[in-house]
Amino acid sequence: MTTPFSAVREQSGGPLPTVRRRGMLLGMNPMKPMAYALGTTASAARRLEIQDCQFATVSERLLDALNVQPADHVVELGCGAGSFTRRILRRLGPNGVVVGVDYSQGLLDQASKNLAAVGPARLEFVLSDIRDVGPLAAGADVLVGRTVLHHLNVPETLLGNLRQVLKAGARLGFIEPEFRALIARLAAFEAQGRAELAPLRRWAEGISRYYQACGLAPGIGATLGRSLEAAGYRRVHSEWFECPMDASAIENILLYYDEIREKYANLGTMTLDEIDRDQLLLASLPTDDLPAVWGMYCVTCEV
Ligand SMILES: C[S@@+](CC[C@H](N)C(=O)[O-])C[C@H]1O[C@@H](n2cnc3c(N)ncnc32)[C@H](O)[C@@H]1O
Image (tube, rainbow, N blue to C red):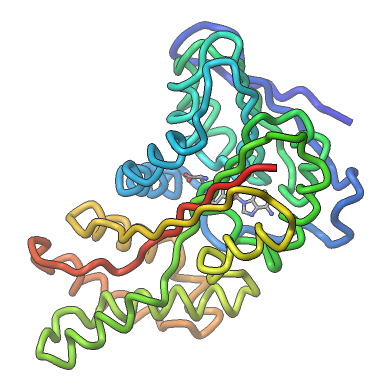
């Protein structure tokens, strides 16, 4: 069942991106939709834009590795406000298609506005839980997701289901963050006297605890390659990247805290006072010599 959505293509005056609504109707997921653990407002969209700059190298690397062609039909899981979608659109010609799937109407609204004038390819948005993406994925030459799989409880199930649905030769690519490994390096630096790094370590610890409390899968990046092999995908390749630390990385963390503060306080992850204190410390941190606080896995494979 589909319901047209009257998105406004404000800047170009060109054809509207399509937004279709999809229910829980595809039979792959017996569970209720999960609530998104982070924010869906314009400020959340701004944070995703900042993250896109931080992810520039790994994002382009993923699209290169997938050898995206101008006429490809690309399905993007968890497209959010569309910053990775924009990178895909830049590689497509008039016969290309991108279908962005997300269950946040607020972020799809942002994406619809943000991408109105980008590239000649056909652009569709589908409001859906990605666990129900099966029939949409069946038509994909390329299926991608950037920082979305870890928002599922058990993303491995979706990967296994998709293996049966995707056509032979389809290429898959995922970028997934990892918040734990670099805590060890931050703690080691602190132990050597770099006390100013403590709010960075506490941020990484907090996000790890929060995702665990929400029942998400923050470790999926590290095990993704093995899971894809176990599901029968071919030519699996996994790479690790550390996120660059600069002023925009700190802004990203500050915006993240703004977005999440009530949820942290309600769950006992951090108190509002602790968040306020760490935001002040982070805002005054010199950014010329900061070690990375998080990293990401870039994983590709084929059916
Ligand atoms: C961290 S954001 C990343 C957005 C985008 N991929 C990017 O890189 O800018 C995660 C996105 O996944 C979406 N999401 C999370 N779980 C989802 C689910 N089960 N079904 C559909 N969308 C989901 C959220 O709404 C959000 O837009």
